[in-house]
Image (cartoon, rainbow, N blue to C red):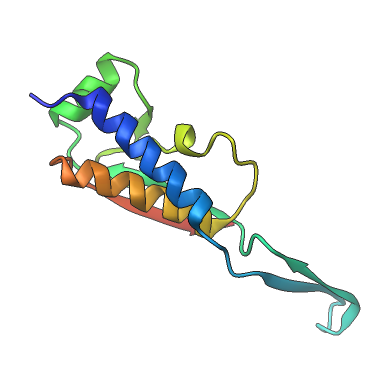
Length: 129
């Protein structure tokens, strides 16, 4: 049997590292009128596009999902958009208050990689807001 707490701890650590090592691509924006004519100065957002990411555990009957639910580990919820469960990587980025889609995706990818290396089927869902 796997030590799921150790896996979660390692995944959290790797996700945290990836979050802070990621350098988002800055984006610019400018206010425009209804005809798309700029009406102000251009602003640069160093953290890039806004968004987030989460992990989908594709096998809702896996021992890992059962363990998480029984031990109240992670933020695990039923996947609204399909089968399986979703988990948040909040513990890996709880000291980050930004909205960088790139940082959150990197965090989730690193977290998921550790899970996958330990035989836990999952995939990352990233989104823009």
